[in-house]
Length: 207
Image (cartoon, rainbow, N blue to C red):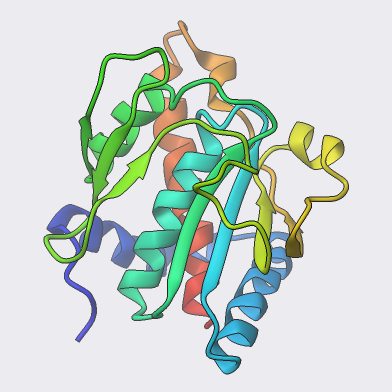
């Protein structure tokens, strides 16, 4: 029996599975690198630490982090710990938060600071994640033995070496920020949430 996600998220992952064939082969080859890292850590019975990194740790890296934790739960892959960070800290963007809530995550804002912390749940089982913007070297993130997954081209170009990373995987996505304040804003955020979720869940399905 698979991990009991919230019904909306369970349904969404099942829909992703039907869409895996639509993922371009070039992307699948990159996602295989992530699956291979996870498999290697499994064989070593070591903690599987994944740190998703983009420039501001405000949108894509958080979206990927949360979907990765869902993928690990859905496919019953133990000892997976998912993190995110940036080359600088800003805030988990409210538009991205809204898009993740719309898809089925339960997210509660814990404070009213400029960089608020959010409690994020995807199942009645297990502890919620605490999400907030931070640099990738923040003390709450792993310092060695992790996979660094670069989710934006700017961070990819400016972090040729991620200190402490055992693996470095370039997995950039287009920034939904480009559509902030336009009539396409909501649809583009949803599009990016689904694209990232589909690909991340595909990687976990390979394990």
